[in-house]
Image 1: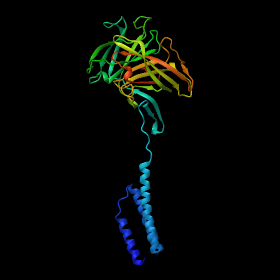
Image 2: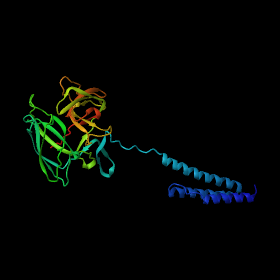
Image 3: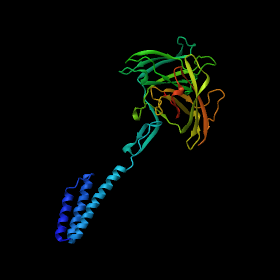
Image 4: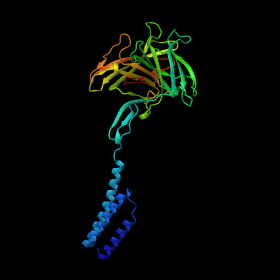
Length: 347
């Protein structure tokens, strides 16, 4: 190859280099690579050998292209952090100290109070029900918009007449009739709660609070239901013999609890949330879910299990759910999770 051939080859290389496609990465990195290429070209000219200069220049160009492709592959293939899952656990509240150096995260479910003022919660009697077997209350919509049943969910709990903490609780639906802004209604229902002996009369003090039927996070949460360190496995739903009436039906829910903590857990300090959903990924906030709350200590006659679980210890538990006749427990997905008590507002 002659010197003229070398010059023509060098001219074609330079022309191809000038007409190349733009390098698809940041301008700062592109400028740094081009400076390195120009520096390499200057060094080649100082060395003076035309053939070697061409080889070095071709190598530098190939190196630039290789670096560009390698860097692009690193950016594209770098593993993305997984998105947080909300199927079972939600981050309900975060407290960040000064300068954002320390963050405390509570895993659980945040609830926000619904704008329903509840007053004069009492035991009473509704037409067709046994004496003193119902809960009555005055409800007032304090917002400027109409509230309908799917918007909110209620929590009813009882305390002993002599004073003390909650010793029975359950979910309740909101009134079927819409509440207009500023409207007040007298509302009542028949719960299955603490009774006086074998009668249907309620024997303890009722309390009622309504929440939005959607999760709240951060500062918007009025109350946080923290997840208990208890895993739930092998959930089964079975019919109850004679567990149907003219307007109601019941089923037994079985589950195996596993203590995931490194310390013993007293199940008397936990509460079980059981809900039946139309989909596997729904939470108990879903307005179409059938929701229940239970203590995690044995309540059914003849049923028992350990109430204190050591680390890694398991217990098979059983709950009996009761709902209206139209509820099909067996066509829905049953979910069970455990939360740390208390779940009710503390005055």
